Structure formats: C-alpha cells, structure tokens
Length: 342
Image 1 (cartoon, rainbow, N blue to C red):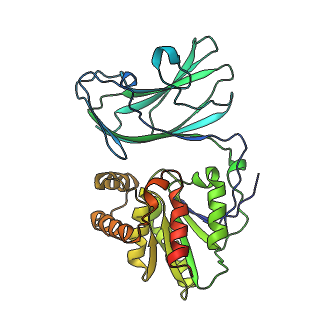
Image 2: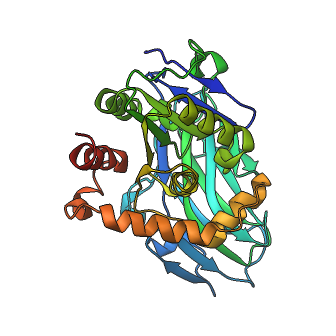
Image 3: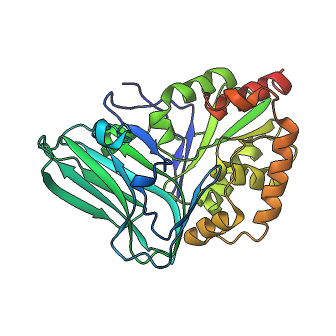
C-alpha cells in the first residue's frame, strides 16, 4: 500500500497534485471487448460491423430480453473452442461494471450478471440498468457470466465494458494537501485522466509520470461524464495557470475524453504544448456525453479537427506496433522529453 496526495475535490471533478496511489493488492481491472465469436452474439437478422474502436450492432426486429452478447468466466473448451473472457473474482468482494456504449433508443440495453456454484447450478443474477453499476460476488460462487440484454434496442455502438474492484471510502483517497505547488517555475504539466480510477489501477504508470516530469496536476471527472468542462474545473485550471504566469503549460491526454479537454483548454491558454493520444470518439458521441452532463460546447467538431492535426504533427514514426503494447501516456511523456523537455 502507498499513500497519495490530493489537491482539491470539486462537486463534479477532482484535481490531483503530486500523486501517489493507495490501492489494495487484490484489485481487479479489466476491459471487456466484443470478440469475433459468432456463437456468443445474436446474429439472426443482425448487422454487426467490427470497426477499429467500436462494434456497430443493428437489429430492429430482435425480441426484447434476448441476449445481444455474452461473456463467460468458465467455458468447456471441447464444446466451444474458446477460452474464458472474464477474470476470476474474489468471493464476497464488490465490483463495478462500466458500460461504454450508446444505444438507440437511449436506455434500451441492460447488463445481466449470473452466478453459478461449482456444479454449474445457477445461484442467482443481477440486472444492472445503469451504465455504471456495482454487484457483490457471492461467497458460494465459482463462476459467473455477463450478458448484454436487449430492452427495445434497435441499434448499438459498443466499445467495451470495464470490470473493476470497488473500493471503500477509506481505501480510495487520503487528502494530505490542499494546494497546488509545483516545484518547477518553468513548466506546468496538466494531465487529463480518462477515468478517476486510472490512478488506482495504473499506479506504476502515474508514479513514473511524476518521476519523469516532476510535479504534475491531474484533472479528472468524478462521474463517468465529461465534467472536465465544468465551470469550477475551468476556473481551477485558469487559476493554476495564473499563479504560474511564467511557466509554459503542457497538456497531456491519453484517451478520447482527455483529447477533447486538452484541445479545449489549449485553445484558451496560449502558448501551450499539446500531447494527445490517437484515439478519438465520433463527434456524435462527444455531443451525447456533453449533453448528459448539461454542458454546451458548440465547436466540438472544430476542436477535434484541430486535435487530430496536432496529433499528426507530433506522431512518432515508431508508434504503430509498439503502441499496442505500451500505455499511450508513456509515449506522450517521451515525446515531450525528446522534443520539448530540454
């Protein structure tokens, strides 16, 4: 276990400074993808397109309550010719599922988690109707399955499901410091987190980020929406920059949410360095996320176009293959140190 220092907690977002992370040894975090096995998807009359970052599913005639997609923690390899796609869970522990998908009509997909004993007999199940919901793994369970259920869905864009441990408030964060005090007066590094939980599950990565860049301000949403644009968040960033008026600001983002936020703030704060990942959401997804948060941002498309151009200008020629094995934030830090960090 290690301790962390936090900067400030706002109603909709959280800023972390000089971070070290507190996390249990038995934590789980896994991104569940939609694989290509047809037997685990509802294929009758369905159109399923496997795109680079998402799966498009369409079937307006599919009956309600049927399974769109299924994942297993235990399989019969001889019968199915595939290995389990879900991790082993700790008995009695609590976990959270975060569904990264858009359905039409809105709210027309659910998740179902079914638990089984050692003999394969069903112990019970839970229906999760929210995109972010928790469940407790029964102490008697030996395996489980997750299904994506149709609740009147006509079409669906699916990216992934995050399965992760749930922490108690005592395990999550210890507030040790309530000030922003970077030691370097020449630079101000601001990193946009894709999810607040990243600081728990990627503790080595963020410790490395601090070691290589010095003091860093991390900005993240409290909820699973784009609240990095909340007026309080914006005011905090502007105040941070004002307090270090001589510093050159560097924005880092390693995913689609952070990319939009970094592009937005780099437009307001000039000059500023911009280091982005290669992954962007479709424009409609950004609009949907912003609408859920009650944020009005009229020039999303222009921001993304600018971010893509900036990304291409900085793209490392060696990135292609290796980036599939290395976290994108490591590439961004190295790019900064190689090109701008001297």
